[in-house]
Image (cartoon, rainbow, N blue to C red; front, side):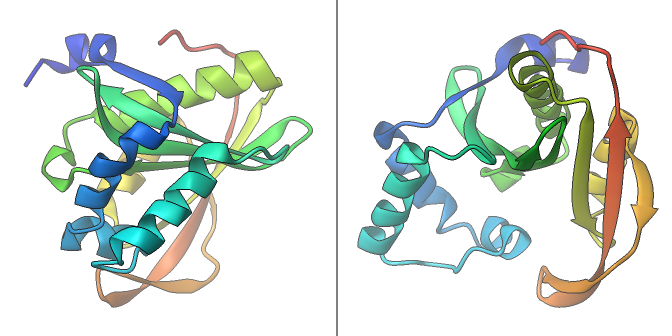
Length: 176
């Protein structure tokens, strides 16, 4: 594994493609990933493919999903949801659970924040995670997000967990 200093040079976000499907199929068979991201485990390949085609062809003014590449290999996806004026909700999912905790989500979030800032003029980012998702919470705090509320409870890794909402207001552009 690369040091964190060099890690950012090996991460990029890019549009999703239909050729990403075999990788997505593997994610759908990873119990840890499915549980952490609210995916049904072992979805039928046909249903999953139809869903993936919708993700790839999605054209929406208030939602963007991009692929996360690490060393030129798709390893996850980054979302901008509820895009409205100068705000958006940021979401990151690393599909290969063995890569969790390596900093890929952190640098992917920086790439997506830079993309949203430069291309969409977004200056306020919202995010939400489960109290039990310590890695996600630490990533958001390292990025400069501040906790703003604790509303709702949702299942995470098979147990009910408090939802925590975060906000980041920035005029800075991070280089990716």
